[in-house]
Length: 240
Image 1 (cartoon, rainbow, N blue to C red):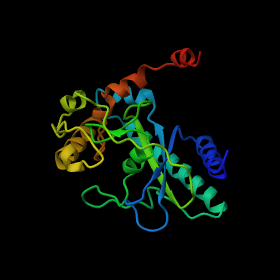
Image 2: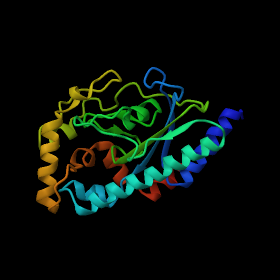
Image 3: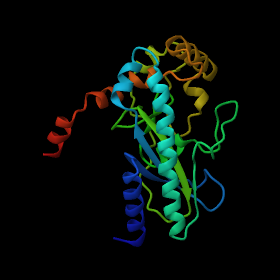
Image 4: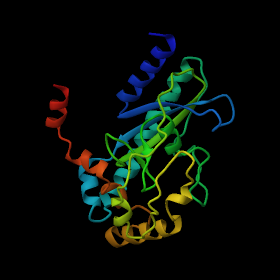
């Protein structure tokens, strides 16, 4: 095992210990400025019971879990950055406090961009990351570093095919059904303002909380449904 591979293994072991379920390293050359061209993507799943409820309506439990998972992710990427700093490299954790979102919901480096380039999944017709393991029922974060970590194979095409389940279920009719490629602009995938307005409306009606959280489009995704149906017994059979 090379020194670079060992460094990646040690980093991933730490991230997993802190709660990360999916991890990957992205080559961000041409995407970011400066010397930190490696992006480490991490994901943790939304609990199954929360996702099942979202198929009916947003819930207070989802609201609480959304922020608790974000806090957990902040802790995970901060620990990863601190580990790399101790190894003598530069590193920056893209925590919720560090990442700034503008009025168009844009950030300098979306977690989804790092995730696709790190091979965690592709962007679905719901404009969210879709993973084979958890569908779109994941929360994401990332960190930047100049550590020479071996990169994973990026996802460069969608695996949604002709599926339009999320498009048909969107109560705002905000999803266009466009099949993603790395060159696809977000505006081609969904109508932001229609989506936000409906999220606020559904969340307030269901919980009394006025915020833009919905979750229906990822809850009904067939890949998410596979995650909901996947049991410990299934995992045991696959391991045999």
